[in-house]
Amino acid sequence: MSEPALGEEFFARPVGVVARDLLGCTLEHEGVGGVIVEVERYQEDDPASHSYGGPRGRNTVMFGPPGRAYVYRSYGVHWCLNLVCGPAGTGAAVLLRALEPRTGLERMRARRGPVADRLLCAGPDRLAQDLGVDAPLNGVALSAGGPLRVLPAAAPVRVVRGPRIGISRAADRPWRLGIAGSAYLSRPFPRAA
DNA sequence: AATATGATAGTCT
DNA sequence: GACTATCATATTG
Image (cartoon, rainbow, N blue to C red; front, side, top):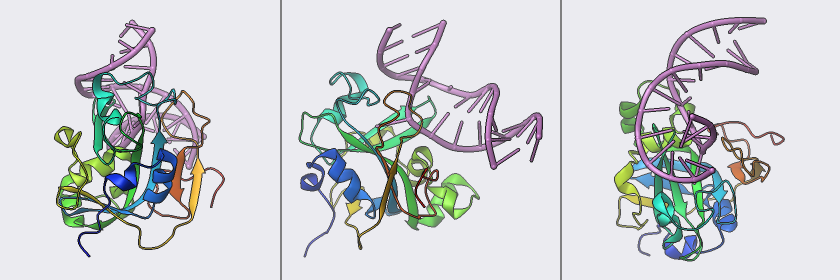
C-alpha cells in the first residue's frame, strides 16, 4: 500500500466524528511530531467559534475544503493549529491542544529549551512552537507528500470529554476531548480519571 | 498549591 | 476601547 496519511475524505465527515477519531493519530510537521492526545471541536453554529457568523477575515480557511490547516494568532503572541473538517462551505475545525512527543524530540528541545517531556506539547501554542507551525502554514492541505501529515491511530483509545478551555461563550458545551489517563494533556479533565 | 498579571496584535463593538 | 480557542513568571500560602 502507498502512504497511509489521512486526506480529505477523513476530514470531510462531521467535526464531532473527526475530533473523536483524531485521538490516537500521529501528527507530523517536517518529521517532528507525536500522538494526538487532546483536541477541541468548533463549528459554525457555535458562538465560541471563529466561524460563527459566516466566512470573513481570518476565518475563511475554515469554510474551505477539509483536510487543511487553519493557523491563527492568539493573544497576539501564540500560534494555534486547527484542522478543517466537514464538507467545504461548513465552517468547522478541530483545534489540536496536546501531543505525546514521539519523533524529532531534539528539534523540539532546540526550539523550546530545557523543559520536561510532558510539557513539550501540552498546549496549543507549545505544540505549534515545537512543530514549527507558523503563519505560512495557514491553508496548507494535509497530504502524504506534504510537510504536514496525519497518520491513522495504531490502536483504539479511551476518550474522555469536558468543557473547553480559555473561552467564555458556550463554555458549557463539553467539546474538549482527550485520551483517558494520558500524561501529556494540557490540563486534567474534571470528572474523568 | 492556587491565584494574579504582563506580553502583544488582530478583530470586534 | 475591550476582548481574545495562551503561556511564563511572580506572588502568596
